Length: 103
Image (cartoon, rainbow, N blue to C red; front, side):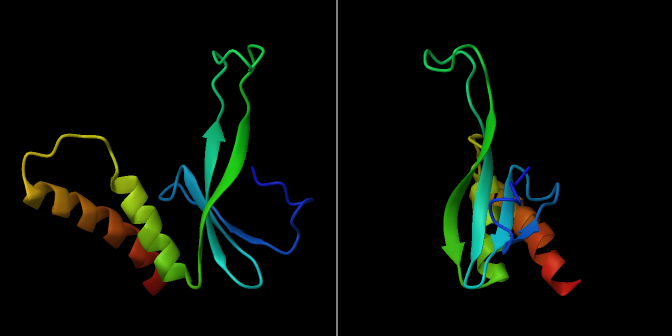
């Protein structure tokens, strides 16, 4: 999880709907972060895997941060055979995340 001893001034928003992403808030921005798992098979890993957090992008408001997460989650590397299916999947992901704002 996020190291709170390091950054006590951040608000952290974690939810299964956001995974593997999470959002932090400092005094100025909403920051979209991702949890990254290192590859234990990599030649520099010494056979061990570890998890760390990586900041991806900074936003002035929560809505833009959630829209970015929705777009990233849509990058499924699947083959869509119609634009309609792709847009339907995007709308579903975006609606789930944006609904958090109206609650």
